Each structure stands twice: as C-alpha cells, then as structure tokens.
Length: 154
Image 1 (tube, rainbow, N blue to C red):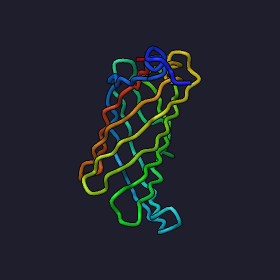
Image 2 (image 1 turned 90 degrees about the horizontal axis):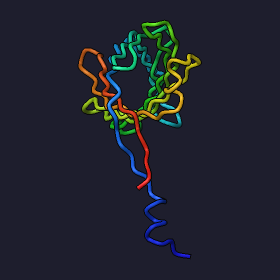
Image 3 (image 1 turned 90 degrees about the vertical axis):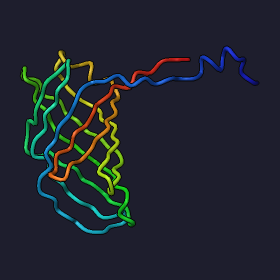
Image 4 (image 1 turned 120 degrees about the vertical axis):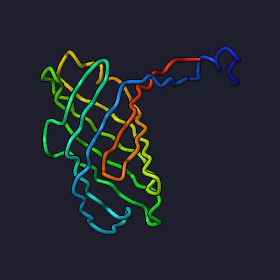
C-alpha cells in the first residue's frame, strides 16, 4: 500500500541544530600503538577540558580522559573515540563519550557526543543527542562548537 501525502509528511523527521556552547580541550601526550586490523591506533591524552554554556559550566574531573583514535591506511581520515568525565561548577558529574570523524589534513573534526549523569539538575543531558564541530590548532588545543539535535516531524 502506498502512503498518502499526509502520511508521508507525518513519517518524515526534521533535525534542527540548537547551539549548546563551547568545549575547549587541551591535548597532551600521544602514544602510537601501531597498525592493526582497523588502522593505526593512537592514544591521545586529554589534559584539560572546559565547557562553557548558558546551561552549564564544567571542567575535567579525572585524569583518565583520552581519545582512542584510529587512522585509516591512507592517513586522511581519523575515527575518534573520546571519553571523559566532567565536574560542573556546582558539583555534578557528567560522563561524556563521542565518536566521529577527523580530517587529518586540516584538523577539522565532526563528533556526536552523548552524556550520562545521575544528577537531577542535569538530567536533560541524558536524553539528548549532540553534535560537535571541532578545529584542532597546531599547539594541541581543540575547540568544539556544540549543538543539540532537536527532532520534529514534518
């Protein structure tokens, strides 16, 4: 059965990107694990993180933050795999993880962060999907513009 025009409209979804804030991360030591079946694995320490937003301010809570980056065989695309924990300025903890793609030639990165927290003040983070547009500087500072993906029906 072919859907009616009205049904087709209802079946489509739209996405709007709503600005959330900025993440600034300082990258540290890089360890090259070597080539494996998925590409060349690099472990990149994240030594500091600052989040600035109208809804929260936070910084890195622990020292186990890193990117488990895999670079493809031609060296042009990196697959990021980042995890860290934030502590907000009012004492809440927020776990952040994201994957994405890095253009290794120009230092531009697209990511899809998700969040986990047990703190009711920030429970809204548990249900959103974010996207980040990042740029890496030559001195290892990574700056992301962060957006919430808001879905709606057509």
